[in-house]
Length: 368
Image 1 (tube, rainbow, N blue to C red):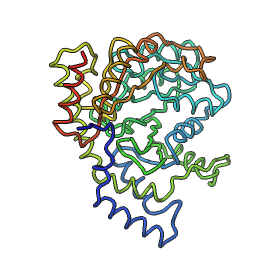
Image 2 (cartoon, one colour; image 1 turned 180 degrees about the horizontal axis):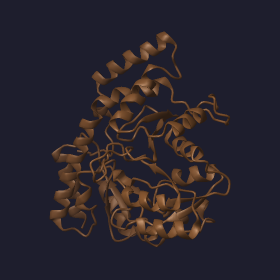
Image 3 (spheres, rainbow, N blue to C red; image 1 turned 90 degrees about the vertical axis):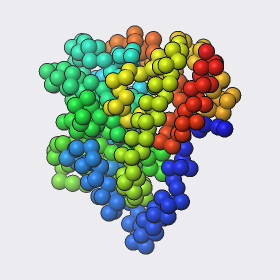
């Protein structure tokens, strides 16, 4: 019995396919290929779900980051704080704006951006913006981050590419702050398109108008350049249909995470799990475990794969250790270096059964 990392077969059922193809047929018949009723429907419903005033669909998650930076006026030579552990796209968006990434260290326990490091880096480097990442699906401590940035007039763009379905400790969903919050709807995300798509959430009418202008070639009363970053109507139709079950699926992910957590914790293995405090609030886009070093991780990965268990190593390097980013040295990186290369993510999807989880956990026990 194999345990896949993702499970698209159970996600895209024959019933889902039939309903989706009805929508595709309608798009075909009306020739509404680029923007249409499903874009408007999704933007309205997703904004309401995430407690934001505006949702603006864009072509992909990386465009969402770049457009958010542009909306805040970040450009050539500006310094932007980026966590030392994240996907390359976070820093890529900064570089594509002509700005300079400055590294902010992370909390070893979670991999989330560290508020204390944020404070020091802002004071030392005069940042124009920072980009906290809700990594693995856990919410960063935005209460502290917001307070620090407000004192220093630093804009915040929350990278929630992995965090649809996550909540802050106050019970509010990701996207409900007064910051720009960006999402990716890449096919492997909790809420996923059939290709690339992304979105930006905001409470600000002014920023919403800027984002609308930028994503559609500068077409508005604003005197500014734009780009082509429209979300096509087909992807919007997929996303709008998937909204109907996403809360149920995220609850199922949480149940899987709790099962993993309870079983692995009871086994008292030499692995580090995420803190119990994230069990109720994370979107559980991924379920990472951390081992002592990269050599053990490689051996564990091979062991799991030998037993037909899908697993993926995440964050082999801290951002400043990547060849393409090696010339950017400003900021703090110590804890990011310590965390890099030690995490492996176990199968995580809403459809894992008890026997799947049992196989994964027992195989990890056997390895140690």
